Amino acid sequence: MAEAPRAFLTNLLEAPGVSGYEQPIQRVVRAYAESFAEGIETDLHGNVILSAGGGDSPRVMFAGHCDQLGLLVSHVDDEGFLFVQTVGGWDPQQLVGQRVTIWTDDGPVNGVISRKAIHLQDETERKQVAEFKHLWIDIGATDKDDAASAVSIGDAVTVQLGVQEMRNGVMNAPGMDNRTGVWVVVEGFRRAVERGVTASLHCASTVQEEIGLRGARTSAFGIDPQVAIAVDVTHATDCPGVDKRERGAVALGKGPVLSRGANVNPIVWARLRDQAEAAELPYQVAALGRAAPNDANPLQISRAGVATGLVQIPNRYMHSPVEVISLDDLEAAAELLAHFACSLSPSDSFIPV
Ligand SMILES: [Zn+2]
Image (cartoon, rainbow, N blue to C red; front, side, top):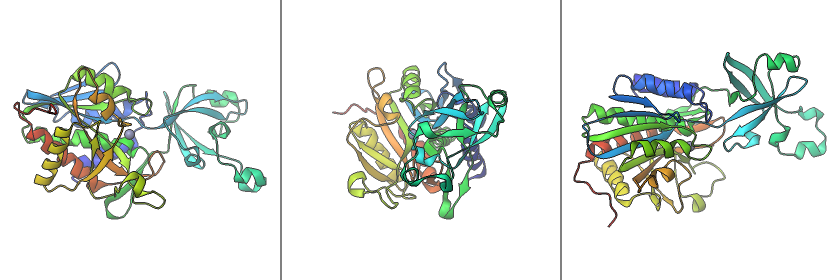
């Protein structure tokens, strides 16, 4: 991966963006896009929308949600421990033993989530799984007043952010869901613009996906595209314990996943496949028998309907502090989006007949 896109990815993964608190991520997107987007706009909901292209039809929208799972401080007790509400679908087992950061108006505050040491647990406690009501954040405060002088109710919390490289271009970080999707749509947009795309191209870094696919709905209404591609992560099934008979075969490093099913326009799907074949990009295919649990869902049923495609990045350990992806998959997905956008012409019809 080239230096600037690589730095963009790291910057995305090191900035916090809990649903509803995405501004730090959106600043990273805006700063990177400044040199190649013709238009950069933040809408009332907080979506960042880049635009460029030759102005021809069709109007195309790429969408990647920029928000991540997190917690909100909801209560401070007399001893100065913080209690939280969850934002998005956490597995509480994944939070025990984590370092966390509380993102206050005055800067980050460090803390930990843990529980009673194993030596102090009785037989029944040792067998219990962690539940949210039993978890707290310790920031080292002496009492309630001390804690309240550092953090406020409603402050957003993330697990400690940061990227770790592994073997073979594999990388782990919290928030791969869906900073990698944002990276792919912005990078695909940049490459399409560089190659002189003639379609009217829009790229949205959408907000609040993790709490109900909300930013894609507002941004799609505003952009009013004919064709849209959502980019998100999907479960890689190439690790122990996942049943391929149930979930299909999706492997890390074998290319982006092109989903087929009711939520995907068949002509967009075939165009993505053909573009991947022509450019010799690796890809995988997955079946999707229901409405997608991601931005592809509101995109498709925006206004009078949008011809929607879904490109997904294989991800192990989704919604954990150690989400794992392959950089090769990101590269191939960005290339695919650029090829797709540059292949469009005003005579294309995506009406399924
Ligand atoms: Zn996601």
